Length: 180
Image 1 (spheres, rainbow, N blue to C red):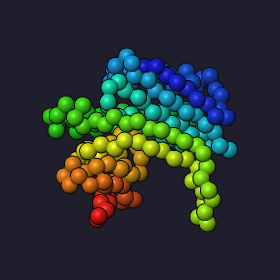
Image 2 (cartoon, one colour):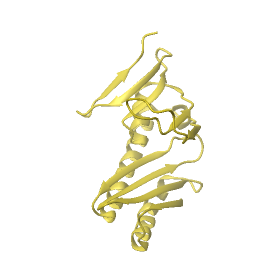
Image 3 (tube, rainbow, N blue to C red):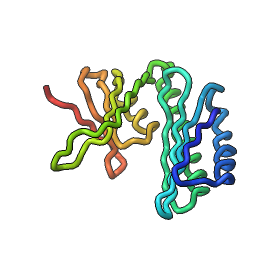
Image 4 (spheres, helix red, strand yellow):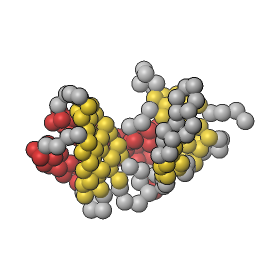
């Protein structure tokens, strides 16, 4: 797995080599053309580690983020988190007995960093445009978990409506489907 390392206010060769060694454990799950984008940052005494793994084909990326007061703890935690996501995804694939290509989505993201005009609630500082795919609610939950986000926007294959799945504070999920 190729590694792209971005450091923001953090530089420690021992942590970087420790991270490379730990990420090598994940090589058995991926092909050779997989690459990981790793961001290491520090804000005061809080260290943040973010890893996004981009896979070949149309398989969605895996993403995890951890913050703590020790970068080495972050690395251990994030590897554990990524391994859990991989196992969960593989288990879902085996249960469904469908090829991975049918459940994955091809995402094209365009990011514009231009600031939009101010409003009384704040300003929009980032805009993302992306293609959404037609998938089932179960597949949307899998994507939400793999990306480690709190919500996921998709077209529900059951009713062909744009829907939003989100993770609730109690660990369950909510589904929002507009009426139009």
